[in-house]
Length: 262
Image 1 (cartoon, rainbow, N blue to C red):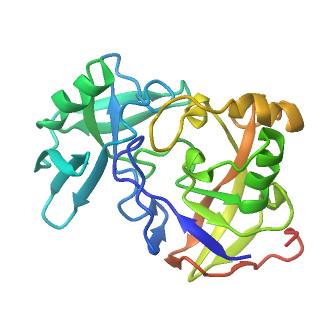
Image 2 (image 1 turned 90 degrees about the vertical axis):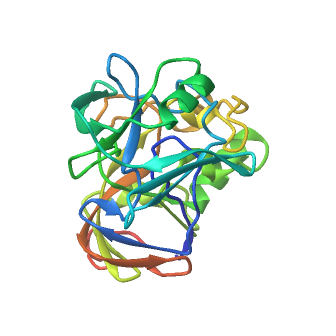
């Protein structure tokens, strides 16, 4: 089993970057999901609520505190990151995510695209813009199994998982709960399943709803338990135990062979 793709974004819900390597620690991949978008409640606004932002790419220069948004091949908003007032945003009624509003030209641009008032928030806790755990894993055999149900190949990017890896057994990652694996230089403790939302029904390029992923997952896996209760699970969470670099092509190996089926 080897890493096949890495997916990150500095702003949760926007277009993904696919770097050749990432550095991970207890907060996740460096530079990943530092920011998220909140409405007036305030609550998280993700691609489950609007696919209009999928085509916007965010790039963050952490050294110079400079954030750039691009779309259709050009820059649509950019500026210095200067966090302001504190906020706690509701994440799926699961947790209150602390952060600070980041005023700038992006708020109007993103609001116009989404058709609702949005504000950019910089996360201030260890999870930042992550939901349950800062790392996620998905095997290629799992996506292939879903493709068999769909009658054609499924683009795994719609699941927005940090680490994708080659596998032969569908959903082998589900058997690793509580186990420790080595990926590149890092050691990860695998957690429970990721319960999927309607955001996965959206095409990762256009943002349009084009695949009934939840219905398809439920059709062959049924409803399964997760930290959110019964739902449609696909992929797993993980946390970092030993920091290090992970690169495309790195082996995914068991370090706790008694608890992990490779």
